[in-house]
Length: 410
Ligand code: AMP
Ligand code: MG
Image 1: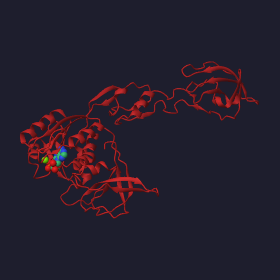
Image 2 (image 1 turned 180 degrees about the vertical axis):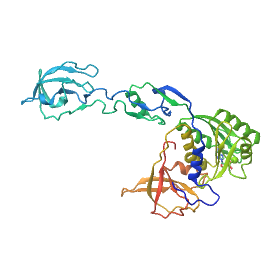
Image 3 (image 1 turned 180 degrees about the horizontal axis):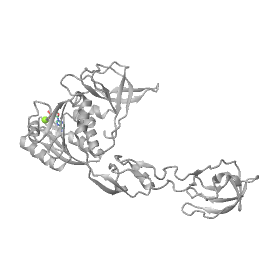
Image 4 (image 1 turned 45 degrees about the vertical axis):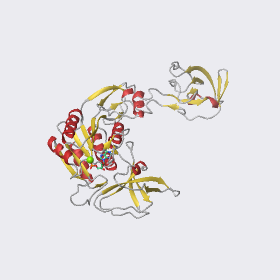
């Protein structure tokens, strides 16, 4: 996502992001949680394995355990014991003997190989092995999954469902994690109504707090939703003051474009050190960022697509850092564009695309249609952003473009 050629007066996207990342504080408070409550929390410790997984060599099959060099010419061994999962055979066996064994049962010390029961003939205690067996066949070795002392998970890891399983396999019952980040959401605008309310002439339904709240939930933060605040100096000030007292980060939408943002800007100038930026990105040119008394402030543009894209590309990345999460890795690919795309040099575009694979096995990306910053439905139809660098002009059908696949937050 290089950005060398932004229009004069606009802040390159990459500068905006690195500027924010350099300024946000990271939380240090931790808590200890049982692993069954730790899903999606960020680990605050490295996890070093206290044991081998599995702890002992064991059978991968129901069958018969034996030592390969104890097989005689006629491949018949005498059954002398049983090893069950949780009830191992602790005795000795000699040349010419074998042990009945079940999947997961500990390998007897005197055996090195397992034959599955389908490949033997049983006559009382006499077991005939019908096939040749390679030394160590059907044996799962101690530590083949995880070795004693191995680093398994690193601080900063956002715990997945699979991670919880891995922790359980280590016998780890509790983990130290960072507390949840608290994020306040404020939607500003006199025209905004909550879904369920009637619209008066000139009103629209409030969208941003809903989509942002849903994305924040996926980030696993505690959302403090202030809902809609009218365009009024005192109302905005009291919401911002209260949000700042309660949250680590305050996110507002609307009122940041110069000229029509009077109250928000006036209030923020009163409360903190907020930079009003014009970022060389599309959608989402106007953006505010800075520090209030206790929290970090992100002022998103009001248009729903601009709010969502700036949140996803900028604020979310900063919040993830504040949470101590390992850097977000977003998958980028190249794809052949199926149509011309309009683009003027000077800003980095995040256009809405749908990636698929054509009959020839090539990645192809199709624009999902109108790219207006208020047209949320075309974002809903997309599965990727088509990222066009600042310097790029229009795209011609058939050209290769860079796409960023939607991640788990969208
Ligand atoms: P503003 O930045 O406040 O001038 O808003 C820009 C555009 O986004 C206007 O058309 C607003 O009506 C719209 N808008 C602002 N906030 C929201 C919101 N929370 N939900 C939906 N649309 C919004
Ligand atoms: Mg407004």
